[in-house]
Structure formats: C-alpha cells, structure tokens
Length: 327
Image (cartoon, rainbow, N blue to C red; front, top):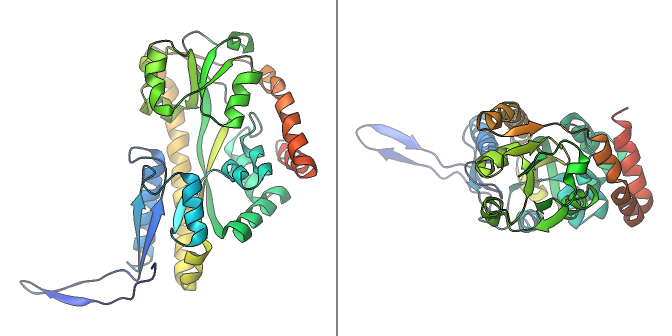
C-alpha cells in the first residue's frame, strides 16, 4: 500500500552508481490544475518533503480532480486510500453544518483572523478535533487561498448598483446568499460556461478571487471590477491519520514542518498576486471600484440569522468567538 520497503540494487554502467527507491510512496490529490497557485505550492511541499527526508518519502501529485472532487478525496483520506489533499475549512460543512461560518460573507475580514479562527478559537479547535476523530484526517497547516471579488458589465460604486445584476455564482449556499441579499439575481452556472455567458451578456457579472479572474481571462469580457471582498477562502493541508501514523517520528516531523513552509509559500503566492493583479486589470482597461462594504455586510444579516437558526448554540458560539478576533 503506502509503505514500500527499501529494496535497492546497484546499477552499473560506465562505472558504479546506485538508484534508490523511496521507503514511502505517497499520493497528494487536489482539485486545482497545474497552472494554479495551489499546484505550485503542493509541488513545493512534495519537493521539501523529499529533500528533508533524504529521499525516504516520495509524493506523487494528482491535480485537476483526477481522483475525484474534494468530497471524494476526503473520503479517500478517511479510508486510507489517499495520503494528502487540500480543503477549505468551510467545506467541512457537508459533515458538520456549523463549519459554514467560515464562508459566511464578511465573516472573515483577513487571513490572520481566518487562521486564528481555525487554530485558536475554542470553536475552531473543537471542529478540527471532530475532523480528526470522525473523518480520520489530521490538519497539517493553514494557507490563504484568495478573497472573492465581483466583476460586471457596469460599474459597482455602491450596493445600489448590485440591484438586478444577473450574477453568476457557483451552486453553493453562501455564494448564492451573497448575490441574493445584496440585491443581485443569483445565477448558478457551470464554471466552464462562464466566459461565454459573460461575453454574450447572458449574465451581467461573476465573482471569484483575482487570480481566477486573471487565469480565466474574464477581464477580456468584463470591464468593471468591484473590490467587494465578500468571501475569504482558506486552504488546509490535510493528511490521512493512517498515513501519518505509518511514519516514524522523524519523518512525521518532516511532513509537518514541510506543510508549514508550503502553507507560507501558498499564502505568499496569493497575497503577492492579489497586490499585483489590481494594477494588471487596470492596465487591461478594467475600471476598479471600491464600494463602501458596510451596507453589503448589513444586507447579509438575515443570512446570519438563518445560520444561527440552523446551528443553535454552537453557531452562536462560532460567530461570537470569530467576531471577537477583530476587536
């Protein structure tokens, strides 16, 4: 399975040399493709693990959802069929509904708050403990994965300009809620169809992190970008508890230390990219606006009320503890 005994032979050709196989051949599955920041960071992780383990651990990367979507890969981690994957904290809402708090629009103002919410609040620690015990998954590190912004075919200078905007969103509750409560008309659509829909004005806008807007060249068919900062995405480096337990203590440390370094690199890629991309879009003729976000956040209060109704005391505790981090 994952563990492979070192069985080496000598290879002789024009002199003696040795080729060594790894003690552990491990797999890292991910949804993002090879051109993404996520893939670059996972490559960094695999290389760091190989170097620091002196070749004892070799990690093969399977990008572009080759092994299934994030839900399928989490199940593979639980069952011991996959070693590593990435996942947003909010994605755990499919198992633990209260985790939706991490994707509530305007809940997380910046990555520092997001990271503390996962690692330092009582709510976050209890959630990760449940993930560990019930899903058989260990958290290695937390990275920043971009903040969602809104592009459109007309300028968005205030929340009033969102009224009636036919906004493409993924078919996810929090994204649908963002569009609905700020006055837009939420339009779920497959990601592969978005460029053409924008080009033909079948929809008036879409929302995604800046690196995605650049990678998909939405700036070619949308000339307005509003910095709505509505949902912050984190990215967790996750390992099967079984995989980690199979490793001796020194190699467990290598994996954990390498994941911390990879998360720092991952975060830097997104943060540096976002700083540069605003100017990139301006250079491409895109008008960038910064509407007052207080009315946007206030408009989402009914959705916060829905979250509290669904999750009761645990939901209330989640919002209170995360909100306290910003005071």
